[in-house]
Image (cartoon, rainbow, N blue to C red):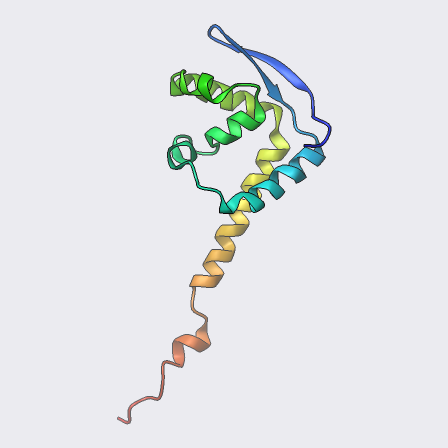
Length: 126
């Protein structure tokens, strides 16, 4: 990874951790790794446990270990996720815009155009 952004100390309950504030270069690198990493085996639970963030994202944006993340309750991770989003608003805004663009593209791809609807083959004579 490129030169890392700042680490900001945070506390939730008795847990002290650091949130990484991404630089522009790190944002580029994160999205490139996301594209390149499509071939790896997904963490199905870690990918759906939270709405906007995966467990891998928490590992990327904090200094927490996988073992430490697995040892805390989801509500504590909600607080950590909020801190990650607070420190990286541009990154999460970009994610939202990408998701919206993907939805629009998907609509275009699945919505039949007028020509294909009316050209289902020759009409039978009446």
